[in-house]
Amino acid sequence: MEVRRYLMLKSKYLPLVLSGKKRISIRRRSRLKEGDYFFIHSGGKVWGIGKVTKVERIKKSEITPKHAELEGMSFNELKKELDRIYGKKDVPLVVIHFDLVKVFDEPFEVERRFYGEHTPGEIARLALKEGIPLDEEATWILRRLAETNSIRQVAMEMGGLGKRKKVRAVLRRAVEELRERGVIS
Picture 1 (cartoon, rainbow, N blue to C red):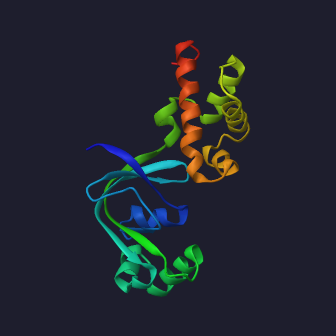
Picture 2 (picture 1 turned 45 degrees about the vertical axis):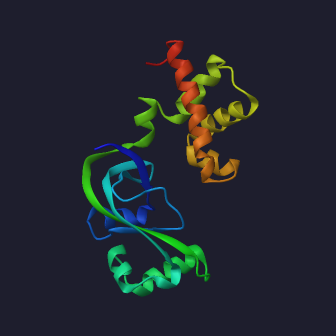
Picture 3 (picture 1 turned 30 degrees about the horizontal axis):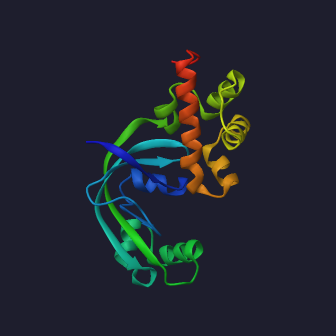
């Protein structure tokens, strides 16, 4: 089983997923497809692994009480939540149906998987201290990471969560250079 993707959840939904009560996630878009395994990610930690059993494309007006049951909430709660998130418009949605495959005994921090025993802020501070040659934007990213220790916050400052990929790419370059110099292992 190869796990490469993540399903990011708000903290309030995590207990419902881990208990098996929440078995779908409703989104505007998703790259997950049937058969994909994914890490269950919430609050900066990975809590387990899920598997996509079905991907359903519907409009918001097509949400049913069955969807609410699979979300682990009442139909009225689900409708209110969707209106809060997406407004009153009848927007297209993706319903990701999934099974809970594994819950980890101890959740782990996502960054530890990629950056060893260092946080993003520590990597940034080491890279700046070592004078790793980077362009102006990458240097700014490292400075903000050194201050905030948050990939998410820096991405939001850059214009949105879609910028996390760019922030992570800068971190990976810094990690490679720090490893080549023998600063980290």
